Image (cartoon, rainbow, N blue to C red):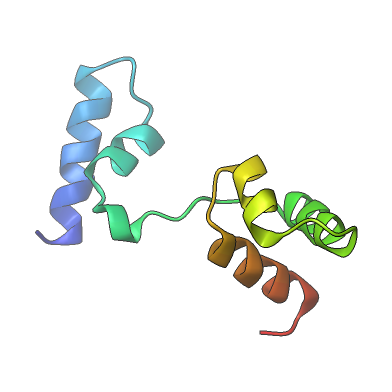
Amino acid sequence: MPDRIFNYYALALAICNLNYSIDLAIDYFLPQQQKQRKIPQEVVGEMARLKESGQTYKQIGAMYGINADAVYTRIRRYKGVI
């Protein structure tokens, strides 16, 4: 389905259902693999500090609701490695 159609469906859902903001409506229609949580840089900095204090990527991911690979990648981006 073209991206434009997702946008129209999301707009219609947000207009017809007051419980949905436009952001929630867009998330509802996006395929699962396209969704990526926005995590503020301050939080990623906290993840890096937790890792330096001895926490595992899996433990940190469990705290923030993301998997260990995502934690690893975000910390590397934060430090400027990738």
